[in-house]
Length: 93
Image 1 (cartoon, rainbow, N blue to C red):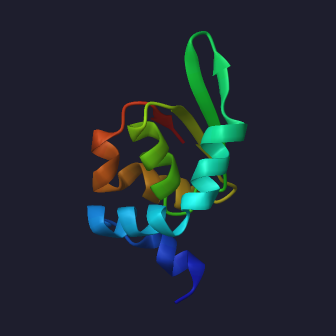
Image 2 (cartoon, rainbow, N blue to C red):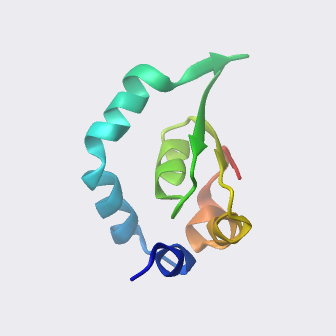
Protein backbone atom coordinates (compact mmCIF):
# COMPACT_ATOMS: atom_id res chain seq x y z
CA UNK A 1 0.00 0.00 0.00
CA UNK A 2 1.31 3.46 -0.89
CA UNK A 3 1.61 6.07 1.87
CA UNK A 4 -0.98 8.29 0.22
CA UNK A 5 -3.51 5.45 0.36
CA UNK A 6 -2.51 4.62 3.95
CA UNK A 7 -3.07 8.22 5.04
CA UNK A 8 -6.46 8.36 3.33
CA UNK A 9 -7.87 5.60 5.54
CA UNK A 10 -10.58 7.07 7.70
CA UNK A 11 -12.11 5.68 10.84
CA UNK A 12 -8.95 4.09 12.21
CA UNK A 13 -10.03 2.43 15.40
CA UNK A 14 -8.50 2.76 18.84
CA UNK A 15 -6.65 -0.57 18.53
CA UNK A 16 -4.89 0.63 15.37
CA UNK A 17 -3.96 3.92 17.02
CA UNK A 18 -2.60 2.21 20.14
CA UNK A 19 -0.69 -0.32 18.06
CA UNK A 20 0.98 2.52 16.17
CA UNK A 21 1.76 4.34 19.40
CA UNK A 22 3.25 1.18 20.94
CA UNK A 23 5.47 0.69 17.89
CA UNK A 24 6.82 4.22 18.41
CA UNK A 25 7.27 4.12 22.19
CA UNK A 26 10.97 5.10 22.12
CA UNK A 27 10.18 8.01 19.82
CA UNK A 28 7.36 9.14 22.11
CA UNK A 29 9.60 8.85 25.18
CA UNK A 30 12.18 11.10 23.50
CA UNK A 31 9.48 13.65 22.73
CA UNK A 32 8.19 13.66 26.29
CA UNK A 33 11.70 13.85 27.74
CA UNK A 34 13.41 16.26 25.35
CA UNK A 35 11.23 18.06 22.83
CA UNK A 36 8.20 19.67 24.43
CA UNK A 37 8.25 23.35 25.32
CA UNK A 38 6.23 25.20 27.94
CA UNK A 39 4.59 28.44 26.85
CA UNK A 40 2.13 30.38 28.97
CA UNK A 41 1.56 27.42 31.27
CA UNK A 42 0.86 24.95 28.43
CA UNK A 43 3.19 22.20 27.33
CA UNK A 44 3.32 22.41 23.56
CA UNK A 45 4.53 20.19 20.75
CA UNK A 46 4.97 20.84 17.05
CA UNK A 47 4.56 17.82 14.80
CA UNK A 48 6.02 18.21 11.32
CA UNK A 49 4.48 15.62 9.01
CA UNK A 50 0.97 14.77 10.22
CA UNK A 51 0.69 11.36 8.58
CA UNK A 52 -2.14 9.39 10.19
CA UNK A 53 -2.35 11.91 13.07
CA UNK A 54 -1.96 9.04 15.56
CA UNK A 55 0.98 10.64 17.35
CA UNK A 56 -0.59 14.07 17.68
CA UNK A 57 -3.89 12.56 18.82
CA UNK A 58 -2.13 10.46 21.46
CA UNK A 59 0.03 13.36 22.68
CA UNK A 60 -3.05 15.58 22.97
CA UNK A 61 -4.70 12.87 25.10
CA UNK A 62 -1.69 13.18 27.41
CA UNK A 63 -2.47 16.87 27.82
CA UNK A 64 0.00 18.42 25.39
CA UNK A 65 -1.12 21.32 23.19
CA UNK A 66 -0.17 19.93 19.76
CA UNK A 67 0.14 21.71 16.44
CA UNK A 68 0.62 19.43 13.46
CA UNK A 69 1.70 20.62 10.00
CA UNK A 70 2.02 18.82 6.69
CA UNK A 71 2.71 19.95 3.13
CA UNK A 72 -0.15 17.81 1.78
CA UNK A 73 -3.56 19.41 2.34
CA UNK A 74 -5.23 16.03 1.75
CA UNK A 75 -3.31 14.51 4.67
CA UNK A 76 -4.39 17.41 6.91
CA UNK A 77 -8.00 17.17 5.76
CA UNK A 78 -8.04 13.44 6.47
CA UNK A 79 -6.47 13.92 9.89
CA UNK A 80 -9.10 16.48 10.86
CA UNK A 81 -11.96 14.32 9.61
CA UNK A 82 -11.01 11.15 11.46
CA UNK A 83 -13.63 10.02 13.97
CA UNK A 84 -11.02 9.91 16.71
CA UNK A 85 -10.44 13.64 16.23
CA UNK A 86 -13.79 14.30 17.86
CA UNK A 87 -12.22 13.45 21.24
CA UNK A 88 -9.20 15.74 20.82
CA UNK A 89 -9.27 19.12 22.49
CA UNK A 90 -5.65 20.32 22.34
CA UNK A 91 -4.88 19.73 18.66
CA UNK A 92 -4.71 21.94 15.62
CA UNK A 93 -3.68 20.96 12.10
